Length: 304
Image 1: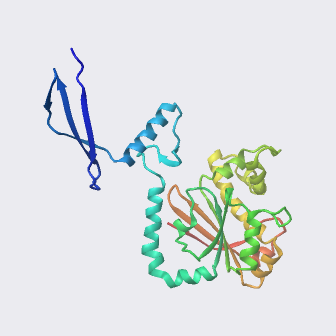
Image 2: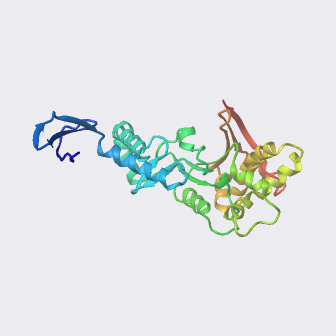
């Protein structure tokens, strides 16, 4: 049978609807005569959908196991709902601008000129432990430094970003409180507890968490008969007090604590049952303790 030539003409509906409407006009020459065929309408998904779908198909065809996001044409694509992962972030930012920034414009304009936080918060970098989210800190409330296992290195050790944050917040911003926050199921503390006595020089993690070795040793001394998970929980809290004790080893911190212009606090966030423990260093009672024997605390409370 003779081939049937087909003539197509496409036009795009300019309306901004969720799908694009294409009009298809077809004429076929059959046995030398032309017969007008009826107009056919095809509903085509919008370009953005097609791009995302194509990107997703390329990811599937690559044979690579997708992670939380995949990069396609420079756009981060969520592996489950196939959307740009920054879309939600953008909406959250715009909501913040509209509902908080614009409603408190004078406050944010003042913050643009200078900050005067009352707190320095030292917290873990764990994504489940955001001090602003769980304790309600607002912009300008807390100068915050986050590191693996919320550790404070000794004053005598080399420079770190944590020590720089201490110097700036205490000596320049004149914060009135330092709050060290630990938390449940801390991966940094687990790494510390699993470490051999000799640190692997190739491991950045081990070379950092060894800062908390004293907390590990005290935990092993009193809780070695417990399950590993319970040892870690004990060490998580011991490490907070170890960091608080370390803070008193900074001369300019100790001086301000002694004259009453600075207070040191510990906090422990248990995200398994959503409770928060808080306590304060009792400087007077701590001075009476043997050096290296820990700190005395007061005003202990549990929020649940």
